[in-house]
Length: 91
Image: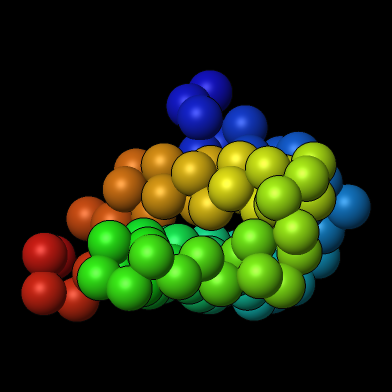
């Protein structure tokens, strides 16, 4: 079992029996991960260009911001590992 399978089993185990639901929820997982990666990339761009951190502005510099950064990092790994199978250009 690979890392992506592990994430899908962890987050969508209850949909294993439902066939179509699993496909729909894989799309949901992909969209959430992609959105987090885009948010992270835009935030890094704003930090580099304007010294403006949107995540810390909205959530403060505490543990909640760290959790968001961890989720963004995990999403980047997920998108990287699944990109070739999801990307229409790379197929």
